[in-house]
Amino acid sequence: MDLGMNLGTSQRLEQTLSPQLLQSINILQKTSLELETAIKDELESNPLLELDDSMPDEEREVRDEELSESGAERSGESSADNDAYGDADDRESGSLDDSALVDRGLLDGSDGDVNYEQLFSDGTGSDDAPFKDLNAGNAEADDEWDRPIKDNGKSLQEQLRDQLMLWSGTRDQLEELAKNNCSEKRFRSLVEYLIDSVNEDGFLQVGEQENAPINISDDEFINEIETMIRGEKKLEECSLPVQEALHVLQGFNPRGIGARDQRECFLIQAYGIPNFSPLAIKILENCYEDLLELRYAKIGKALGEPTESVQKAIASFARLNPHPGFSLSNARIQTVSADLKIIEKRGKFSAEAVRSPMQKRLRINQTYKAIIDDKNASKSDRDYVKTHLNKAMEFMKAVDNRYSTMELVMQAILKRQKEFFSKGPAFLKPMVLQDIADDVKRDVSTVNRVTNGKFVDTPYGVYELKRFFTSGIKQKPSAGSAESSSGAEEEILGSAQVLDAMKKMIDEEDKRKPLSDQAISDKLAEMGMKVARRTVAKYRENSLKILTASQRKILK
Image 1 (cartoon, rainbow, N blue to C red):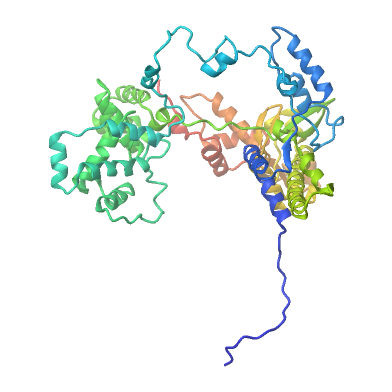
Image 2 (image 1 turned 90 degrees about the vertical axis):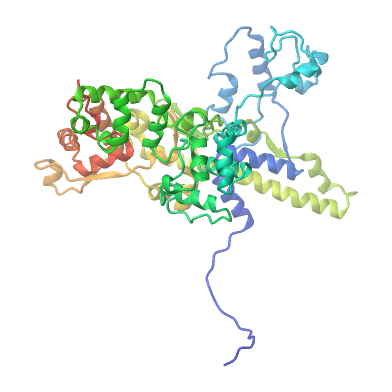
């Protein structure tokens, strides 16, 4: 057997992506906020890229007219918006020469009426300091350090750790922990581990960690916590430090934090509320499964209480919070920025990409570019400029390609979803990614990158492009119809239309006799939409998030 090295030739097929194509794909799949960050990073790393700080004379005149109108309110039809969402036929798509409106005083170098002494003292440029407490007296410099800091932006875990810092166990409690080989420092680490296992709702992540590998730790108490969180070991079977750590976490505010399920969350809150209904607590302790199905008569029979008393006790659950973590979390809400805008002109719709001021002002730095033609410049300088010039051009081309591709895809969606934009969301037709890919002559993966995380501003609100791709229900033509006699193919009914009809039925139903899934299926058939009961149940649970008929029933 020859084990030596041999030289030979062979043929094979493989796909290689150029750096330019990789960059274009990377830019294409970014959201608008991620693109802003990418542009800032490119501006810092590439000196051949810059932001155009100039302003065309036409925009200067419009800006002066706006500033001269005293007391005029800003509206969505201001000149800035008209420039951003103007006539698509009057401006070149993807142009980088559009400049953003900036403060005129910064362009001409005029200072205006800026009070620099006050600017450096309290951060405001005039006597009107909007963020300064004008009613407060002049505080001493040392008093500034005593002001409390707001918790804006603190995560749920950070605020729970703040409460842990304020916790101090009793002497007897610390002595019992020490007997179990657990110091106070080690005990606090156990509580911190539980805090890190709390999700946004305030529950310990039992379901999310069910199929995850067990985190093996050198600390036996940590391993015991892992098995307890997974439900593999009851809390009563755990060691004292683990039990106490969970009790400490569940004692933090708001009540219900650190529960392992919804029942335990309600019980923690109910035990802490004075004069809470004893019958409601008994229902939680002994009849929770029947409570989920709202079996009032069965609960009353099991507890020896009349049905009316059971219903009143269940009504007291309205005082409990099913998601205690939401009331504590002050995390910033991520806003959605529209990448496209739908414009209607004379009954026709068109799509236009929305560029931020930074994206519109992006251009090549002409000062550095002139070095290429400078005969006195060294070869290394010219090579450096050429390299970064190519990178800048490729980056700008990738950004332009992103917007042109988004407009191309959105135009194809407009053609296929005309009734959605003319009549409303209920008339959304079934459509898949392959349909748009065939229309625009692009790969399905490209269409997927364009529609994922991109939003469009429509007359009916802001929608993610993914929302326009929905499933459908095949229906045979009704018996005796022209389509049936001619042997026509099965028609496809959009799921959006079915969901809208179902929601309207359930909203208008008699809550004392709510509609069952079969009754909804029968009513849909009367409206010409043949939907099986099983499909109705799937849409009701997964899409509409509506309870069953027995759970929607209200006793009066």
